[in-house]
Length: 226
Image 1 (cartoon, one colour):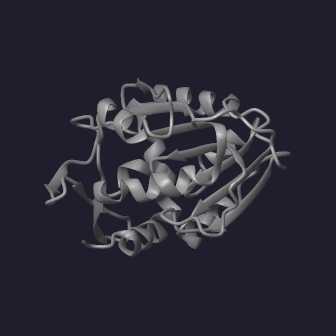
Image 2 (tube, rainbow, N blue to C red):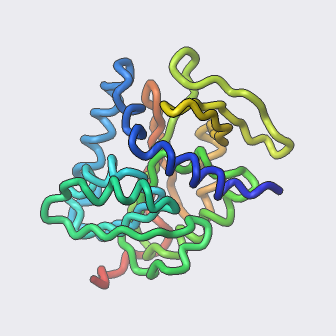
């Protein structure tokens, strides 16, 4: 099995300065506003663990109401961009961390978020990631996930599919370099099946260009430890 972590980290390191252009596509602006509005209030007063925060684009909206955020990513280059944003009074900490282990992350977070990360997780490694992520959340933690739907004419075309069922796109950066990027597009049923061991009810909402998953981790909520 090919380990995609290093190629993905290198791709996003090179893409850091131009990453947020993807959120400026004209046809997607209504959906982007819906996602921003959701995240601005969804984690009010919570201590949020964010996986693969990238340049902090979504972190800045979560910070409008969250008490604290630990924003992790494998790429120090994108975290350098994220650190330059204004997060108001929210206590935001950045950490270079492997999403498949989260070995440096404490296990006391009252909420969890990852945006546009699930689609980059190889199907054969989903269980490893989901286990590591939920192992850092308290019982009753609120979780939100957002990611792309495949929309013909707007999404980058699928180039190939591997033996595990993962799909790949070919992307070109401003420096002229081309990169094959793993990008999966799960169905609502697949998402519910993967997450059902960790949540009693998994709500999936489909927008025009993105999907949203919301749930609470199994068990009674504990008092925040922070």
